[in-house]
Amino acid sequence: MDDTSPSRTRWELWGVGHRLLVFAVTVEVAAAVSAVTGLVGTPPGGGPLLLALALTALSVVHTELATGIERSRRRATETSYFDLSSVWTFAAALLLPPGLAAVVIVVVYTHLWHRVWAPARVPLYRHVYTTATVLLAARAAHEVVRTAGGLPGGLADPAAVTAIALAVLAYVVVNTVLVGAAIGLAQPGIALRELVGRWDDVALEMATLCMGALAAVALGSAPGLVALVLPPILVLHRAVLVRQLEEEVSTDAKTGLLTAATWQAEAARAVRRVQRAGTGAGVLILDLDHFKIVNDTHGHLAGDDVLAAVAAELRAGVRERDVVGRFGGEEFVVLLPELPLGAAGRAELWQVAERLRDRVARMDVGVDTPGGLRTITGISISIGGAAVPTDGTTLDQVLRAADTSLYAAKGAGRNAVRIAADRHVPAPRGPSL
Image 1 (tube, helix red, strand yellow):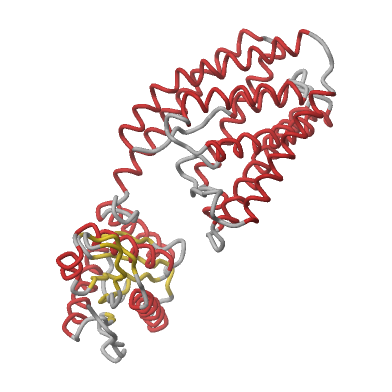
Image 2 (image 1 turned 180 degrees about the vertical axis):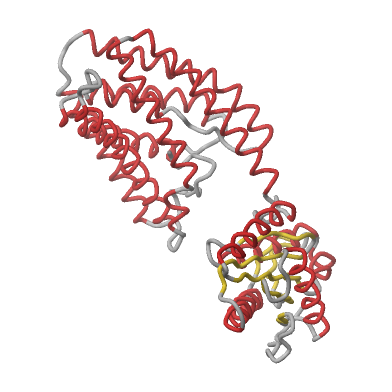
């Protein structure tokens, strides 16, 4: 996994402060020192050199074969190349002396730069930093296997097999920590999930490294079998393509939230789960007040910026397990599972709704309009809510109750919260557009 992966938060080196610059340079210097010291200590011999040439050639073949798949994925999703080259860099770390492994990694990433990242206009300094993290991760994996005595000679060598598993873990941890640290320095306060990547991204990286371990074992015992590694790797590229096509369909392009259809499917499953568990849930429908004024005054592109900003506030204002979607136009919807039953759950639902209303009311959104840069203030949102199972036992029933509450909030003057059958709750007011 690297910082050029499309699923990772992007970071910029220049203009973000000296701490990131110092950290990045330190990592790169450490990688260079590791490579140089490894080269000095590399024993002579043609065997390791032939293995290094074989791994480099396999990586080049892999990249060239995968380029067609990735070209199709970019046409469909407009995202960057998904780098699975760790299958070869990890194999090099297990098989080769550290110096030769470093040379293989540098050649592999130089080829990737010319064939993939430079045409995609990825900044060179990011690619250099990524290469440095891979060099250090590979060195960590090599040291783990070296300490255990090398690659396994058979099934009767469980210690070496365990060492490979630990080497996979070391590679992932070192790479993830270094990339995550750079992102964290660039964007203080970013969520931990964004630093370490999503679970499916980590699982994909682990699968790629396992293929690298198999490639190393094959090259060490039966070199001809290493060709069998290429088809599974190409299948992984296609799996990434399918996954991203699914994400493209399920994600609203303007806000990054779930589409209405995907939200309803996920929310319905969540409602069924809480009913089986005997707990409660809540649904909120949120509608931006007078949103047409934003579009008419500042243009539809500015309106899109406001929608995206509101979506980010909503996502930041709820729990990780809450399901947030765009319902259409300027409407959003949130499902909150695992709420207490009865009055306690209704009170928590109102508190969440009021917190979201307040967050939106405090927003200042900078937009680029035909008249220049502008800051839009005074944004407000009306919210209607309903609870499961009090206001319905199915998602459709609860949505209708929440929608009725939303109209009550609009009728109360907007910038208000109304929860179904909960008229005693006050409706805070504030400036609206």
